[in-house]
Length: 301
Ligand SMILES: C[C@](O)(C(=O)O)[C@H](CC(=O)O)C(=O)O
Ligand SMILES: [Mg+2]
Image 1 (cartoon, rainbow, N blue to C red):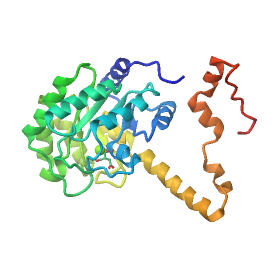
Image 2: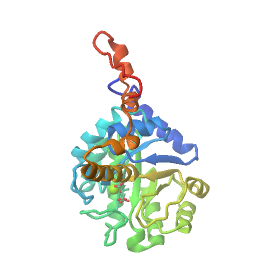
Image 3: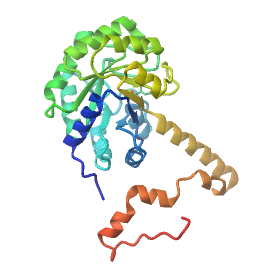
Image 4: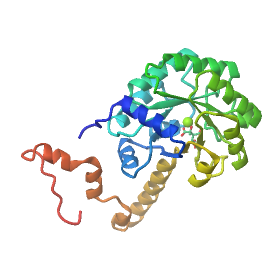
């Protein structure tokens, strides 16, 4: 009820253990705390809080407009209701290396299991768009050293994302990744790789856990879990999948409602009240005090 019983420390250890297992973790991006509960219920390994989704949720583009305190406050609403480890997209760290350090502490306090910082300049943009620019390698290394040093729980995962593939080419991106590991990154997120061979080259070159960003409508092919596992990747990320699915359904539904003047035709596509109540744990609230709470549903709801 109300919140998960799992502590942040337990979730961080859980993520570390899963990463050490060598198997591929499947990590969808949650679109709100309720969907994070569904990600847990359907058996995924962890959940992701995407910068693109957090911004879109506020009706904003993903260009670094959100602030670290804003996303930390939102993140806490997710971590409170799921026992799954959650990894957050901390963009560029929201400023100078000192800001990246503060961001790490805010995300630790929000109960997250880890974050990733990227090497783009501010203002950043989606990693799958053209026209990106990256900071000097040493500048990003400073960002990472500050972040690693600020961490109070050594199990909090510090992942470095490099956007350099599209800007400087694959070899430079690999060199950066190695430098970022030396600066304290526990894992690497190579952004916008072009094909399976590039994913394989990255795996050969870097020893730490690797994340494969399987975002839709981007520059990377949508490699299946079996392929990513064979390539030796540790995390398959589906960052914006739920938002895209939900918004597709919402838009279709609105058009149908406007055209038909009733939602009758939409009922088979809806999550029924009973499933929503199950996810929210209404029965536990009823058991807490049945004299106050009685949420028995009529059959068929
Ligand atoms: C992973 C990502 O950083 C995100 O914010 O979810 C985005 C995803 C997207 O815009 O498709 C990115 O790849 O830059
Ligand atoms: Mg992002």
